[in-house]
Image (cartoon, rainbow, N blue to C red; front, side, top):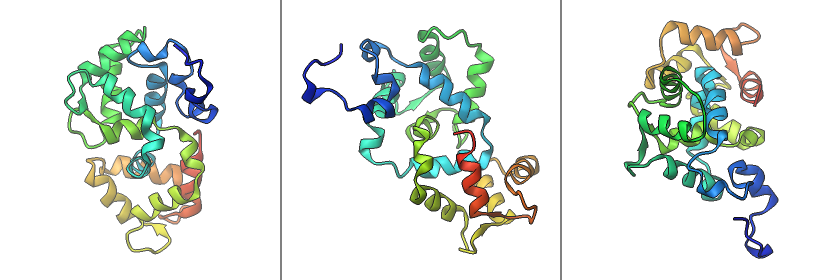
Length: 203
């Protein structure tokens, strides 16, 4: 139920940050439709953007992840610290979502960045965090510098391959797909402007 004490109500900003908190009955639902829509959005992103979001997610403040932590705990029914494909399927089914096992598996594979077979807390945050974070210059710069290992001002093909290989994504097709999409001037590198454009596109 909504709290009628104004001092204890969530703020408008919190409601926007955590849309699953906006409805009076949302607290007794184990999962909100935001999960499915955001996971689908995440799945559609190129691999570099997925990794960059992971870097940003690792630096979120406790205040920014408060609602997400509760959502993760609700889905992690066996309290193992990870969400299995079965837990994901059950959560989405409880939503009333008519999603096939194959679709659940594809979502799992997309969000399970380190290919461990389950979704850990950071991976969940990565897929679920509010994309308003992509407006913050310092977060984007931090993520860019994570990949620009030699501080040259651009992400080289080698640096891209190194980052993607670390997460089992370093095959030629994935690297080519990222460069084809992001490297607008076709110089073989991704500069900061190209990186920011990629991150803010379709957020």
